[in-house]
Length: 158
Image 1: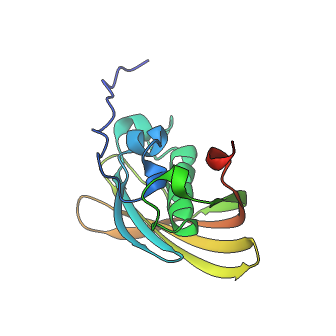
Image 2: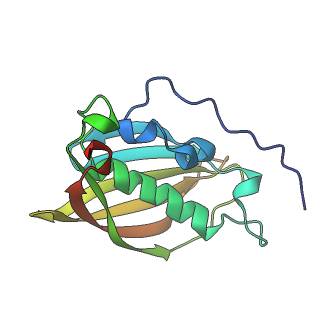
């Protein structure tokens, strides 16, 4: 097995969103928040060799986790100063992904999430994942649809 010498990027002391404060997975992925608004999020990450499958293309689980992070950010308003101060949280009740094309090490992935529908405690979000190769060519890698449910924040229960 290859030793990639993987170390997690330095954790942000003031993350762009409270849910990223203790999110070791997003930290390990090296996700950067580019834009946050009500029902929207745009994030990026550089695809590294340890994120590839046996075919030397992006592992589907890595692409899914990346899209899922954009989904979580779009679902939860960024107004709270900490996760413990959020009365409710919005979590995934289900998600589907369609892989359109492959991505390779060195590509910069971008996920753009937007709310498509919201009713009561439920919502539907679409996330498009694109890859920009080192030569500047951009292509769609995946289309992710997430279904959300807003629940009481378990961190606030006594």
